[in-house]
Length: 251
Image: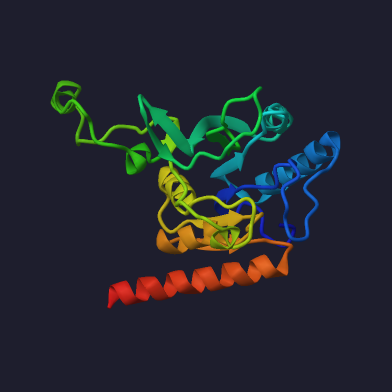
């Protein structure tokens, strides 16, 4: 990020290593907690430098059942850099009455329940960034609320819980052999919520390029940073495939 101009990025969307010992190809995902928090605070400062004053930083991170505090410890550290404008809970799977939706990852322990969510912290420089809430909104269930409450359209704010399931996969290769991917819909919704046309979007932990694929689909300019050359190659292929798909649709 040192090579990027200050105040040049509209939206930052990223999912850094969680420091939980995930099996990346080259990065060792197990630092001492203090070292990890220092490193991520430095990353936060670098993001604040390149982000426009009215920009948004969507940080996807999670703890584990045995180490639940780390995301919140990081947020305490980043209070010196950002305002926490919104805390979105990304619901990956959910049970409603006797039915279930999404993919449930088993937890083999009698002490813990399944972890079905992750955090998306919406960080801004001043805490006063206006959002296009209805661009990621949902229709009203009770249509009488539209006129009765003076709304201009059949659309209400989605709120701070987003149900975005993964597509079911049966092998790690279907996730591009990366242990920490997220669905394309997640960064796409973050871009829509920020609501700036033709935004410049940065992912400083690009991985296999999901944010850049979403940026291509949303008409944004995507910039990705990644240390692993193999993941960079996968990201390039995915973006090129997204471009071809859009071109064939236009025809």
